[in-house]
Image (cartoon, rainbow, N blue to C red):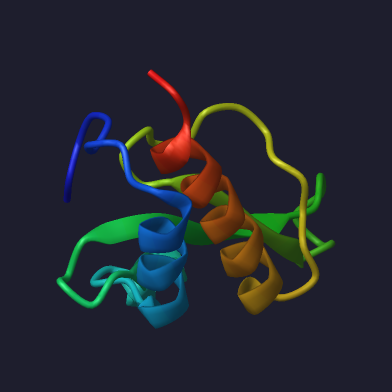
Amino acid sequence: MTTGRPKRLSATEARSIADAAQLVKAGDWSTSHAWNVVAEDGTLLVVVTPSYGGSSRSGRDGWKWHLAALGPTGTREKWPTRQQAAAQGLMSWIRWVTATR
């Protein structure tokens, strides 16, 4: 897992990486049910985790994401599918890696 901010990328470079990224089960999926968005070179970009309702009976109520390099940072919006959460996470990753420093 990469930590810290990667080198700044152009929008074209970042979109190319995001377009080729894949959503795969995390190594600890059997216990966490988390999914990873991984670049072609194996870099972990985004982590997608199930979100559960307030009571133990309500079950999963969506999916959340966070940038892998930053870890879980506060509550994010919930998305109905893991694919939608992954797409939102990748859009945020693109903004992060293309931001002026």
